[in-house]
Length: 138
Image (cartoon, rainbow, N blue to C red; front, side):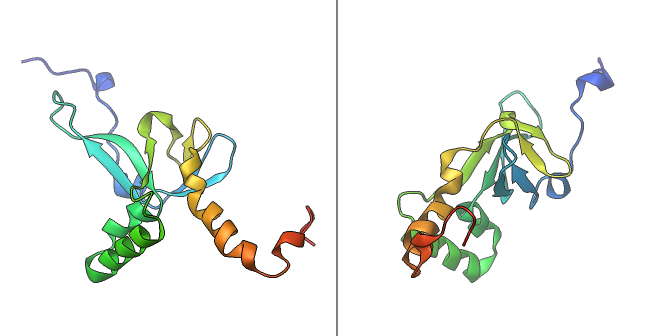
């Protein structure tokens, strides 16, 4: 029986502590959101699951909320955004670092900004005077 070198083994990671609920920043330094869930998969040859993606957005948060509140959250999101029922998936290959916040090695995908865009168009944009602000915020 051969024992693999310690250098060949990936470093173990406490996902709940290292990744969940951590702030995510893209390569441009913009805040993307928080890690709401983690996608794991088996590649067929590994004895352990492998992290394949970080999930963010309201659709990822709903299943983490137990019981009726979680189901209510998921139903509300399906009603508000029927075209985007899935969470935003950030492939693990695009993660540059995990500590102290999650840093991406590329700009965030456009679907990350969907909620902000919707709020700007449907809520903030309807506030009287919202369209008259200049660049200085006056």
